[in-house]
Length: 634
Image (cartoon, rainbow, N blue to C red; front, top):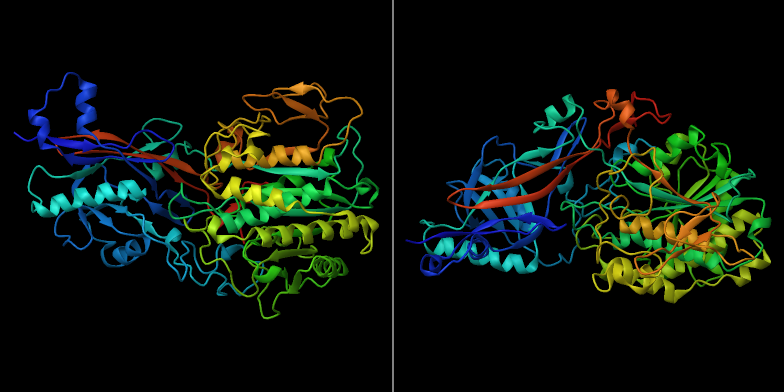
């Protein structure tokens, strides 16, 4: 008698899934224990899930709406789908072709996507105008992302997983075995079962999750810092120049969102610029103050910038000398890692022609000229600014003086925007360093109101730092185990996805820098900015592990192997959680992310575990900008 065996994916942070594996020899093998039997019956496949998320217009992404267990043999896409099947396709491109033909076929129980090669012409999971509903202009048919497939915005009633290269080989072997034996039993098969993971039991569907107010919220923490540091006990209000970037990305497969060019090249350029400014003197004497903002949640409805402005209106940052009226100019660093010959483009809103806006543009031009780079004004035919956090600021105040620095003119240069292939090979460290140099000089010109400040001559961007930042954030080795990261914090993973994730802490509590609450990327940005923007002290800083006795100081650089130091720095986390537990009554209007979890199920055929499927907030409607519970539509 032959015995069917089951391939299991172990419970790792990556997507988990199980495939049934035929091992006839088990019938003749001696098994001494249940764990040994299980080890022989199960093989491990690793991959990343397509997640399901929810907005007020409906569900998007992948899920399994069946209320009962579903099981089917694994087969390749070239086999006829005349019976229930778990289909293996060779690549993401092949998956799109497959669903165009069979996406509504009820015999599709689930899809396994092989780790195919990069498409030379480009490949983006997002639409051609990402988040067009937030555009502060009427032309929302503009094509910014020419290779956008829109895959992220589609809905599939079956699970979809991107397999690792090793698991792709194994899945191909299993499918081939099925084809060779004519799909006769025992068969390599897949079984799915779906259970919603929420804050209450028995809320297993989107409808019940919303009805019982048990959805888990999407959220996280943005980072804000001032330069120089503000004395929060006696803040001095000055006009503010905001320098900002975003640090989250999204792809069809949640755990594979490297975002090397979009958005991380802008973040790294901003960090390198702050590092350069930290080595100059006299910044405190300037008539304007610099505020650095690094947002998260921007790929999902600009959550970070929207929540920041909502909190700003409530007066949450008064102790930092920051109010709604104090922001005078905004410079955003977008995708800069592919700038050809260090040529960048400055995008402004078409109606923004104020003297303050012109000052930003002139400062960018002069800064580029002084660094052998070029900044050109974006094409006047553009409808306005490209997809960016500045859109949120324009909605908040149409007269805001703001400019976005990008590597492109009329359409994205990044052919892998919001794609699994937006990795290190997609960025140029020279371009990032050039953008950092332009930004640092521009910020000095704006803060000093002087295009010929003597300080400009002393600004030097550390190109070695830029190269190290790219290695840390855009590779798997050393990745987040690099020397720079380990000097400031202990990373929880070797490399991280830029997906914003689910909020895991009470937003009313200031979090400690723990990986259970805050992502590795966010914790590094916080520690780096706190270190570089801190005030010099005459006495030696005190050692710390998490909290400093002086309320004006923060603990920087604490790791598992070393204590941190207390620094006088006005760097803080800004939560983007959607609401507190006391405000759950309006949750169905202020829709939040929730989790689906496919539990392990067994039967004579097979077993499968799918880790977590995230469901999330609407990018179409959301909270009023004043923080009210009523829906606002852009």
